[in-house]
Image (tube, rainbow, N blue to C red; front, side, top):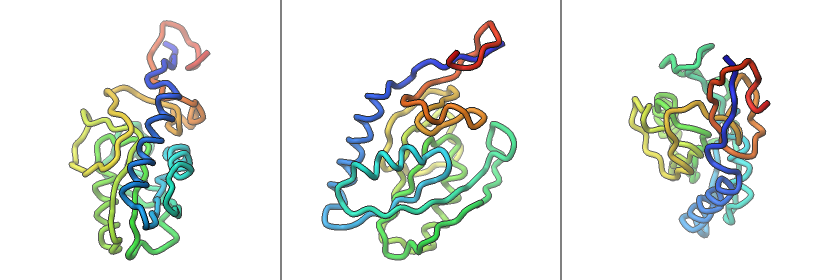
Length: 182
């Protein structure tokens, strides 16, 4: 069996929604600055596109966290592989994620961040998959709700491939042995 990538959300639709989220953030934080925490690696594309469109002052930091181990489903054990470089104290922090699936990782991560005393703490995700939610997490800005399919593109990957697709696609099994997108 091979795999094929089918467009789930066209690139123009993604770009338009990112602008809408940036407009909402800019309006909410007018006269203040925001500190974006990009969760590596998947949210890099989304974070950069969003930061370019926000009209209030923006700073960016990075974290790398994992709850998947070597598998494709969450292990439930969260590990911080790279922490922020800057303090979060008294900052308007917005955690930027590519997709929220089970919610375990973000539930844990938001708990840690609250103890770092940010002025505000919000969560922004490009994709939300509520059908797989195990832990409740408050999502303040959502790009798109997606069905329970394996998605790639705009930062999301399959075995480190397809992050650079300018749209959100989903992988489907085909009857042959071709690579996705071939």
